[in-house]
Length: 250
Image 1 (cartoon, one colour):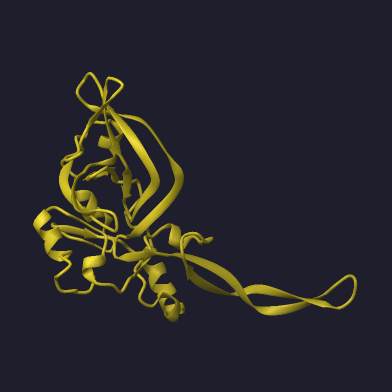
Image 2 (cartoon, one colour):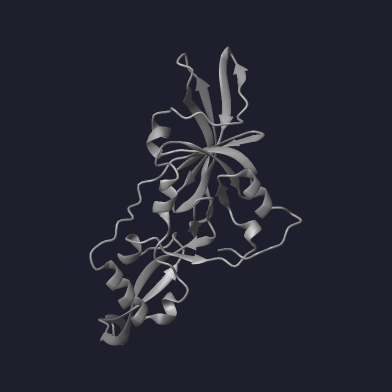
């Protein structure tokens, strides 16, 4: 999904991405084997995220939502299918247009909403065409990506990104075989008769299993600090009130 954010207001253009969620043959058995083989490595990790529930929000087209994260405090937005964003037929709410050289334009920032909630450090321009619709008019930025969290919970009212995305990196762990060097002496060679996985951040190399699942670990933080989307502004304000209680994330 994509989110378009304007100065002083937020229009969430959330386009559902293409990450597959259909179960693969024997995948659950493979996960169970991995957990049994390395219980300490995978303790507390989740191998699936509720992406299907998130996509169901826009099964019948764009809907109004309210965005909360470090930048946007329960600001109005529009959640829409990825295909709708590509066809430029979405009308976000509360984005104030301006006139620039005779054109009606508005400044927006797009946020990607999928397994991870993220945004590129850039600003975009949309131009209102003769057909009355907004069309992409260019953008600028440094290209850095800011990630707010991994999808951890979705129901009919709220979606939360209260996790950290993880990947699995296997490495050879022995036994060690000492080989002779041509110049004399010996050098260690770690054989792959034993393999150990490491669970690391997505910036590292990863193996086959983590490319087939949505692997994430939960964060321990107050609910009011979790990046979220709401269908109701009242629900958003209630959970993120500065003076409210601090239940833990779900």
